[in-house]
Structures are given as structure tokens and as C-alpha cells.
Length: 395
Image (cartoon, rainbow, N blue to C red):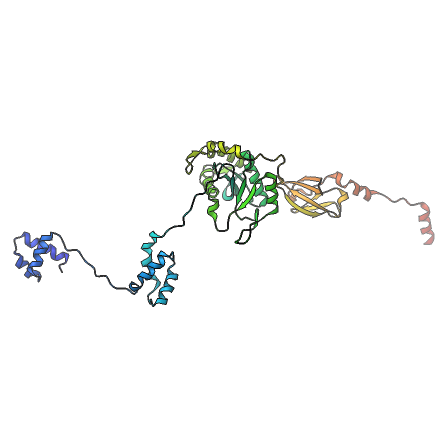
């Protein structure tokens, strides 16, 4: 078979007028080989002889497994080894790799909800500057599934109480409540996720919130994050837009004020790419379908029990706060608001209210709480003089 160099020599000698017979003799080939090469007028194509591999007899088995949805090379290797394959997994992976483009992906059907039906809730986290100090910011994101209008609220914790507060602020921003709220399986809302044989077990306080605001709680199936995909995309949208545009804030209040201004001026006015409509226009059709807000706002404060000490104080977060003296030794319920207010209840009755104080500022005291205790302490027992005379006589 002629090589590329042979073709170049044939062409050069032919152009110089050398006879084909002489060219063939010089290259050691038949004259017809030279004649055919000149007729082709190009170098001969290089044809490689395919070498047989250990995998060749088993390719049909591999293809069958791939059509059945088995793409794990190690699993396929074990099947082939049972059939007598003695090669390695690398050869198998090289054979499978070009075929992966044919693999069918998991089909995702986009689920669109009607107006007013669903709100999706999630949390995000980012680091920014507040009062010139690098600060980790947690933000609650709540999005209406139909209109794609969303609201977010920034704080320093993603616990249950802040989750409830974030939802309530979103309801107030939207001016109403949807039929259902879809949450992830965080403990703030879901104590035990759904299984094949049981429904999810929701946090009691989350159920209280749902009852007061009139929505049905729903939880995503474990490992099915796409169920709540609309809201999770908004977490990235906020990070890539709001927290890139605004990088520092003077306070937490300034941060949330800036967030609401940005929501109204930019996020609400964007054209949503999926529904191809301006969010505020679409929300105008959804707003009438939302339920009205309740008359009373849900109390998102921390609820804890405390025993009143002998001196009429309760211990809260490393400091002490006074309660009326009559409650010494009794159990009271404390409510710690997200605004750092402390309310103390005896049953349904509010008996004391304080502002949480740093330990360095000392205890929180209301003088009127302990007036009865001081009166008892200052009382002097009056005895007749004869008692002391008897004692002196005895001595």
C-alpha cells in the first residue's frame, strides 16, 4: 500500500516526465498502482485496522443494559463478569462515555398554580457589612407561586421564631394570605418529614400560625427540592442582584428598609422570564384571591417557662429581671420578642415587662415589684421592756 510520501514522489516524478513504469520500478510497486494513484490525484487514505478488545464480545450486553437505564459502570461490570468478561472497568467506561449524550434526563414538568393558592418559603444566607462590621445575614424569602412576587426579610437567625416573623411580614407586604404555604423540612415547621406510610408532622407553633392566618401548611417531599424550585431560585436572585448592588448598611433596620425599597422599585417591576409578564401586573390579578389578614397579629416571641427565685427575680439570657413579690417560688411564662422586649405572664395575665439588657448594665428592676418584700424586711418587732428586765435578772 502506498504511503503519503510515496504519493508525493509519484506526483513529482510524473510532473518531470518520468514514465510510470520507471516510477513503479523505483518505488518497488506495480505500474498499475502508480497509474491508479495518478488517477485519484490525491494521497491514499490511511486505513487503520481495528484491534479486537476483550469488551467486543460483550458490547451487545452493555447496550442492552444502557437501554434499560443502567448507566453505572461498576454495576455493568459485575453483570459482564458474570458472563465471563475478564477486562477492566476503564475499558468499559471509555465505551460508555460517548453514549452518555443519549441518556434520557429526568423529565421535569413545570407545575403552575392558580392565583392565590400557594406561597413558597425558604431561607438564604450571605455575608455583608452592617455598621462597618462583616456580618452574616440570614434572609427569609417568600414567593407567591402564581405571580412570582416575592418578599424577603433580613435578620441574624433562621430559627423558628424568625421563620414565623418572616412569613408574617411577607403576608403584610402582599396584603393577604394564600391558601397554602409550602416549606422545606426545617424543624421550624416540620418535626418529622413525610414517609411512604405517613404524613409530615408539623411544629405545633407553625400549626398555630397556620390556624390564625388561615393557610394550609405543606411540606416538600424529602430529596425533592425541585418541588420548591421557584423560591430557591429567588434566593440566588437576591444574592446576585440586591447584595451585589448594596454591600453595606448602617443598621439592621436600614438593611430591611433598603430591601423593601428595592423590592418595590426593581423586583416587582421585572419581567418574569417564565410567564413573560411584569410581576406587578400579574400580582394585580392575584391580589383579590388572597385571604384577608387576621385582626390580631401572631405573637412570634420566644416562649419559655421560668421559676421565680426567692428574691423575686427570674433569670433570662444571663441576666435577672424582677417580677411582683407575690410570685416568689411560682412558675411564670416569659415571652422574648424579636425586638428584645421581655414580657412575663402568670397564666394569661401580663405581670411584668422589661427591655433585655446586657449583663454589664446590671439587673432589670422595677421598684414597685419588691415593695412588699422590703416592708417585711424593715418591720421591727416591738417587745415590752419587762422582757429584757427578766433576762437581766436571770443573768
